[in-house]
Image (cartoon, rainbow over all chains, first blue to last red; front, side, top):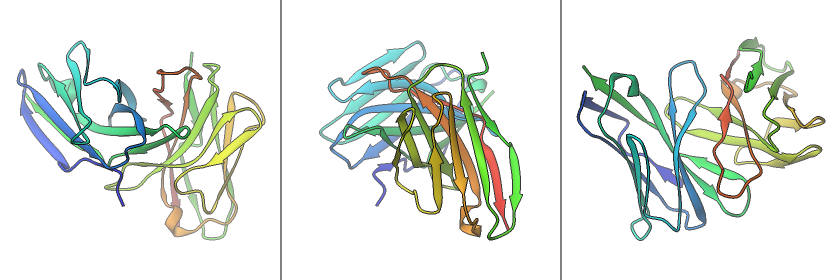
Length: 112
Length: 114
């Protein structure tokens, strides 16, 4: 049973437009959510996080929204740049310990 | 500042062989993790450590063992490799600080078991 789902395997967006990546979760014990970006042949790099007691966190071009009642997260990238082309992973932290559960990822392509 | 490094980068094993993957971090992080990533799936936690001398099981621990004898190193062992363990393995570390849960990942080890 997938606790973290990213139902769009891929997404294409025009440079300068908004990219919206979605994530759904089932585990009510998650207390933090994190987004990571991954380029081919590299490890994931941290982008932005949000506590389960907040509904929005912003860092530069990246904003994460959390709808706890719907168990839904979204990452907004504005404006999108070609360098943003990568695989994006959503992850939830189980507050029981240091157990992090990752979604399967969404491949974002930003077209020039 | 190298961050998180992993050794080796690539390895091919025959079924039944053993090997150890080494992870090292120079950020003085308390927590360290081992994940595996398979095609079409997210990263799955194998084992993790909350400090020197302590380890705990993650989501998919079977067939793996770990040790954390020094704070900066976290070793992942495969005692008898199986084709199902063909995967990309990532090590990560993070601080011991509430609200700062971001993990820093190494570049990965691509393991093929034939």
